[in-house]
Amino acid sequence: MTRGTATTPAAVVTDRTLLESARRISVGLPHRSLDIERSGTLPADLVEDFTRHDLFRLAMPKALGGTGAAPRTIVEIVEEVSRGDGATGWSLLIGNIGNAFLAWLEPEVAQRILAENPRMIVAGGQAPLGQAEPKPDGGGYTLTGRWPFGSGSLHAHWFMGGFIVMENGRPKTNEWGAPVMGVAYFPAEQARIDDTWHVAGLQGTGSHDIVAEGIDLPLAHTSVPYFTRATYDDPLYRLTAYNLLLTVMAGFPLGVARRALDEARVQFAGRRLTSDGTAYLADPAVQVTMLKHETALDAARRHLLGTLDELLDTLAREQVDYAGRARLAAAIIHVYDVGRELVQALFRLAGTAAVHDTNPLQRCLRDLVAGSQHVAFSFDSRKRIANARLGLQTAPAFFGV
Image 1 (spheres, helix red, strand yellow):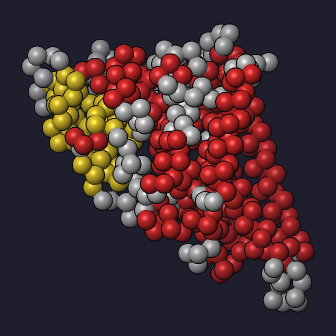
Image 2 (image 1 turned 30 degrees about the vertical axis):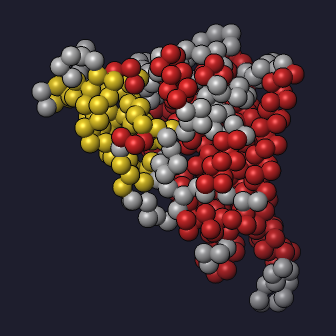
Image 3 (image 1 turned 90 degrees about the vertical axis):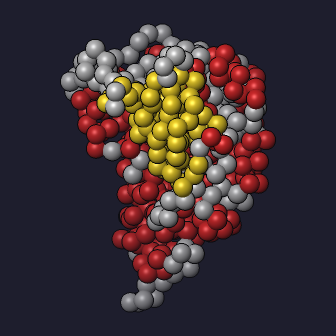
């Protein structure tokens, strides 16, 4: 089995180097978590570190200047950084998703954009919350919209935002009666950022609203990633856009949950039951709870990585139907569920000590619950995946599996 990855010595060295860089950065993150949260955005020195070590280019096609990192390595890097600090891990994965979606532009267009700024970071989302009015000459659109949850917006150079094409004040429809949609890419200086990120979790991600007001949008700066794969040979691009997005996001719950386990062991080691003075870690209820959730996390991680490797290996030889592709999406959603249940259980075990904002356990809880609210893990997404697994999906679905 090839595990869906390049196996040349150069590729192995590259993956190892990238992971080692992520680990070096991650080591110092726990001591900075509170400051990162209070600042509300990824600090400039961390943006510089990620950029210098090519960690924002993990998921970008190699032909566009990406690292060529194996999909499994991308998961492991996001996991490692998220273990150091959840908000930093989230900012890293979002920057990688933004850069990855440049792959749905025409290659020469993406190359031209990247040539203007080799340190490119793209923020935004694909949800069709904007409106694009076609220009009379047919050469592009006038774009207006507001896209919330723009993680990394304060350090991004370009934004992306989904839109619906308008015609005579109404959504233009295709031959099936559905709205015509796309994703726009535009320089950050053409938009503005509304300071809206005042939240419980992932405070350090700067996920403000991105606002466009009548932007001149060339047709070449639009794409339609919702139903098709990008045309690159990298193993990651054998996946659909939805499964690619989920794969880049997969390491976050693994890392945050592992950080919670690390913290729980340290914090519980010095505690005793108030009832009889017994060591807290000697309490069978504590032992069994920690064993249960750590084992569940390990199993979910193995299942996710095994499913990813198997799907990529199969896609290297043949196409896979909806049901087969849905296994990966289901495995990644499962990792988020398992991680969330783990941090909730450890938070309960920690008692009142966990509620202080200086306690990393409560930050792990808030960050992982906030990340799990992403639309990729919504009930509608789960319903699409369930339909695919049951053989009920017979046509392409918006951002389907």
